[in-house]
Length: 304
Image 1: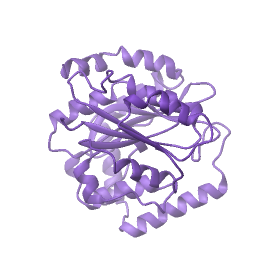
Image 2: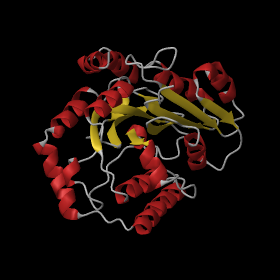
Image 3: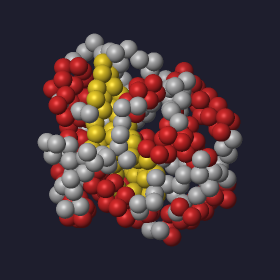
Image 4: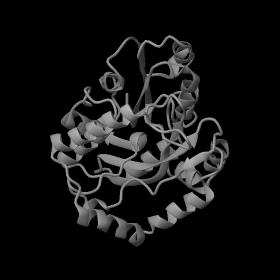
């Protein structure tokens, strides 16, 4: 059987109230056999930490579409991701938080980009934040990274948004597992290790991920809600520890150059468009527009 294009690992613990929407955000982009229009398969893996809500009931509902799943006690989110990746066979890997959403056209955008750049082992895209209560989009940042590939070095700025990142299985085997001692900065640690091993990002000009802002989210800060002080302190301490461990220190000249590049590559116009025309819309309205957008239709046409 042909190797899947992508393996997506969802780590879940007692997020049954969000999990079905997360699963459906993946399944709505593939057919009943988990294939894109091109025929390439997508793997979906769910690692549940022994939830005592309705999570397992929801997982069972979609079990025939999953490559693998389990429900058992684990050692936290990082351990769950590592467990899932041991069962992944895709050419590329990513994760998706159980309370977030894979945005329309993402799988097709990755397929198109990997066809155009077969040598690339690391693609990074953009994301949105939305308020669970109002369902309104509250933040749409500039984008994946701020320097073109040929200017990226280990000390260049690190601008990556969680599960908007797709890296090759070969890179994963070289870089190794996610650090299970980290609970807030495991992604930052992993991307810095990718950079240290010589991998460079290729920008995926697509909004790949919708980050759900809700009261139970450990790092969500929006409106009047602030991150708990103890969580903030532990998070910042992990970042300092990670930077020290890998020897990372962001170069100020490269940071300034990154801002300049925002204007040279016109990505500031994309940012302005999102801030004016996307922020404030409901997620449902955005999804409806995205599914019928020229970009998504163009990508579908490219992989037929």
